[in-house]
Amino acid sequence: MNINATLFGQAITFAILIWFTMKFVWPPVVAALDERARKIAEGLEAAEKGKQDLAKAETRSQEALNDAKAKAAEIVALSEKRGQEIVQAARDAALQEAARVKAQAQAEMEQEVMKARETLRNRVADLAVAGAEKILRREINAQGHAELLTALQAEL
Image (cartoon, rainbow, N blue to C red; front, top):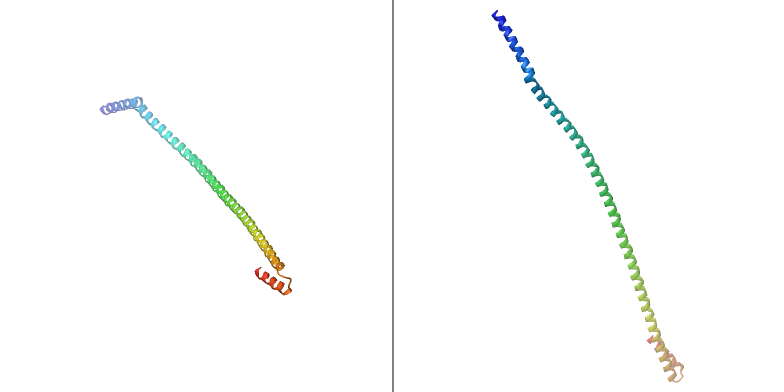
């Protein structure tokens, strides 16, 4: 009987312990576990959202980088084109300046030729007048005229 009473007393004590644990100990433990599971789930959701945001940011940064490269290539192409235009404009200006200088030199040369011809014409006229004057002063003599004309030819 003692064993039965002890067994019965232990069973009642165990039942009270189960009831006390279920009533007072178990709810805070379950609440703490649920809170911990909720925080873990929120952390996983935040990590997943962070991964998605990171992927979106990488996509946007890659697009921005591609746009910047395209704009840089466009600017380089425009600057090369502008440089070629400047070189061509300078070449055209140099050719025009060379043509102008050449035309000016040609005009100056023609003026000098005209001036030399005019000087030569005046000199020839002076010599012709001098020769005619000498011929007229001398008596009319064929041999003297021939000698005089030979002298005039030598002077020219």
